[in-house]
Length: 174
Image 1 (cartoon, rainbow, N blue to C red):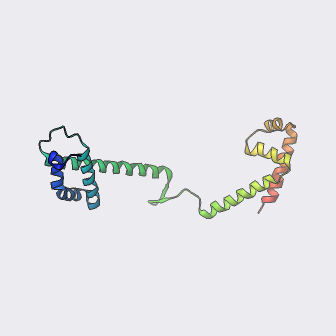
Image 2 (image 1 turned 135 degrees about the horizontal axis):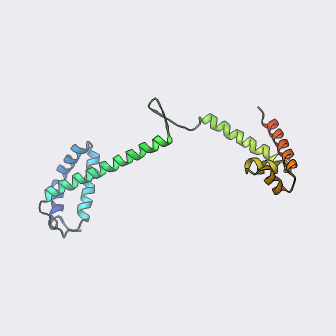
Image 3 (image 1 turned 180 degrees about the horizontal axis):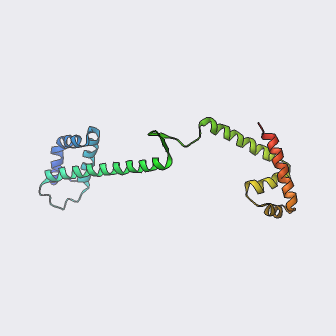
C-alpha cells in the first residue's frame, strides 16, 4: 500500500477525515453511519488505481463521499421496498396492523394432536381396510385403481373403505 505522500487523494482523506465524518453525519443524520461511510471511503481510496491524475483531491473526496452515501440510501430504499412487498404478500393487515395468517398456537397444537391420533387410528385398522383407506383417501386413487392395486373387486374396496371410515369415526369421535 502506498503512503499518503505518494497519493494526493489519500493525503486529502487523512487530512480531512474529521470534517468528512461531520459532513456525512449532517447529511445522513447519524454519526455511526457517517463513520461507516468514512471507512468505506478510505477502502475505496486505498484500493483504487493510482495511475489516474487527481486535479482537485478535496473536491473528489467529497464527491466520492456523497456518492457512497447515495448508494447506501438507494440500497436501504430497495431493501425497504422488498420488505414491504413481502409483507403485503405474506401478511394480512387489519386496521393498519399486521396480523399473522398462522393459526393460534393452541389451535395448531390441537390440530397436531388430532393428526397424531388419526395416524395412530389408521395404523390400528385391519390390514386390508387400512391399505384400501390409505390408497384411496391418502394417495388419491379411485376405487377401481385401488381394487387393481390390491387385487380385489371394486365392491370389496368400497366395503373396506366403509369399514375403515366407521372404525375411524368411532375411535376419533369427541
